[in-house]
Length: 357
Image (tube, rainbow, N blue to C red; front, side):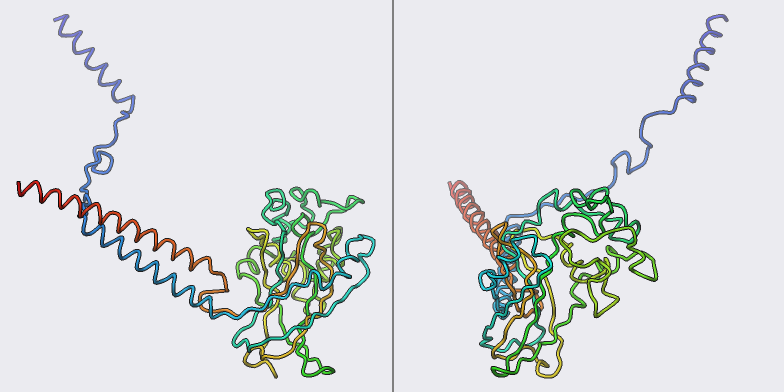
């Protein structure tokens, strides 16, 4: 009787311990026990070769279409680094920051640029992809949350008087500020200003999500207690005197500049053609001139500046990169296809040889 009593007591204790301590074993379900039905894809050599062949045809076809589309784009580039050498020399001295310098660059458009025409400014040798340069900005400032937040804006956080800079940071301080006006020369004495507009040149997400002005009725009071960046001639709330709604952090030119480029040679959208009067179908062939107010210095870093007039197609601008990428991908895929086909035929011949013996 004593042995039986001891056995019952031990079994009861073991049951209690198993109930108190939860088990680490997974649940007895099809998912956790890895008992779900599965399908193992088994492709034959013919299917794999057909897939590589079809992929190569598709990539080569898309690449040819993109290259032909890019070739139809008409583009004119005018480099004015040396043509405005006097203004460039004036801008090398920081003491001349308040002196205005203008230069005019005549050129001839040999063919009519039909459709939508866009004006870009292009910089050579300007590295916007430096890590510290990209981080030198205040996102809380740019969304209008806190205008005086300059924590991440070194070395352009505050002025020499300790006043916060708005917008702060190296990106905002180095903003491109040349003024470019395109004129159509009817004759030697009559010059018609081509109506270019600055609205609609930014991404929608940038204009209405990433950049917002502080919630003040008077924009100048919203920037009270701050100062402009050192290289800016005007504060942020006076960037566009013609359009009051295009000032502050939602200025189109400012937003375009703040989206940093990946390569040292880049172009950014500056203006687009407004179709009225003589320019209902684009830019007609003829004599033109660029009237440039030179403000952005490039000689210090051995850079260059240019103005680009270009049309667009359904595939975008004149860049050949996407078309070439598809062409290279298709060529490599076809190379792999022919290599695997040669190996497959050789193995099949060897197999047939052994079967005949």
